[in-house]
Each structure stands twice: as structure tokens, then as C-alpha cells.
Amino acid sequence: MSARTSDDDKVILIDQRKNIESRLLQLVNEVFHGTQVNYESEILDLLDAFYDTFCENKADAFINAFDNLLRHEVSINQDLITWQAVLSEMRRLVQPYLTTEQMIVQSENLWQQVSQR
Image (cartoon, rainbow, N blue to C red):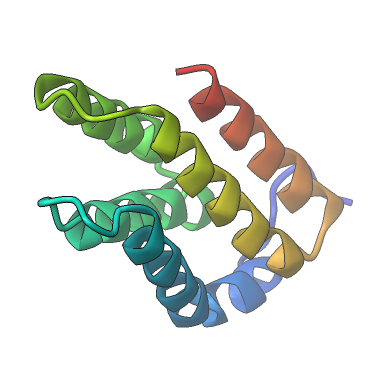
């Protein structure tokens, strides 16, 4: 097995993007129901950053996007615990489409980094 994940290995994950996006947005609407804030653009930005990091090899895109989101949430006194649930759901939705051991390891490293924020 090569040290890098090939583009062919990422095809399934890329093909499932819209499905993952739809399911994640559904969860976010349930989690944040009743709040005055619409988080759709933040979720889409976070998902874009995940794909940029994972599929386009843009090293810190996801971590930076998540850090920016957390800073914003702190500035408006929002509960950060909810974002842990969003990350967990994102991880759960992505996991079935990781087709190689290298992809799984790369993904787990990424989730570990953001969960320590």
C-alpha cells in the first residue's frame, strides 16, 4: 500500500458528498432548532474544508475552518458542546466511504486534531 491515498481511492467519498451534506444539514437543523442562527453556510464551509483537507491535500483547511467557527461561536456566546455532536455526526457519515486503511488513518488523525480544540 502506498503512503498516500490515490485519487481513485477518494472517488467514493467524493461521490457521496451531496448525501453526506444533506444528512448533516438535517441533523444541524434538528440540533439548532429554535435558535435564531442559521448554521447552513457554516456547515457547508466546514464540509468544504474537510474535503479540501482530505481530498485536495490542503493540510490545515479543516482545522482552520473549525477554529474560525469556534471563535465565532465564542464571540456570540453560543454553546460549543453542540459542535462536538456535529463533528461526531460528520465523522459517522464519512466513515463508510473511506475505502482504504490509509484513508481511515488520515481521517482519524483529522478528527483527533479537531476534537482537541
